Image (cartoon, rainbow, N blue to C red; front, top):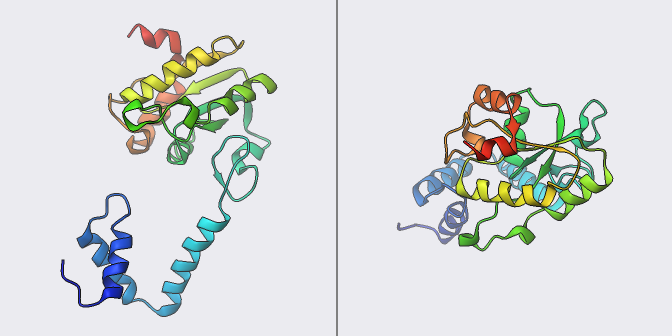
Length: 205
């Protein structure tokens, strides 16, 4: 792609680094910003800079937060004895949108994937074990994507947690294999949470 300006080319190159954004889309976004008021562009830039510099991760569940402890973990009406284990913040948002869950979360920060060089030590596994050892937890729900990486991660976590005196369940498989949680419709995801099954039962299916 030929550019009439090096500044334009550099801006397009940065936008093209975003996931799912090719050069043509990046160019369209950059040109859109150029057509906006300077104040609007400055607000956009400031919002991104502030986000990157000031965003925090909840010290309890590792969800993205404005404070040391996120709003979900600090909410008095949430059931602290019920922990839903998810891959990342997008899954927390997807489950919250169903309005079918009132417990708390634990964000792993990824899934075990040997092909990508991601092992258990790269995830927030140890802090999950610590939570179960120190808090009065009654049930852990595995709400991970129905993929090979998701199943591998669940299998590993089950081995790590099975000695605790808690119920371990997984969301019902109304979600097709290979499906990512964030793309599942709210009704299906909500039903999968509500009709979760003991993990041992899911192994025989």
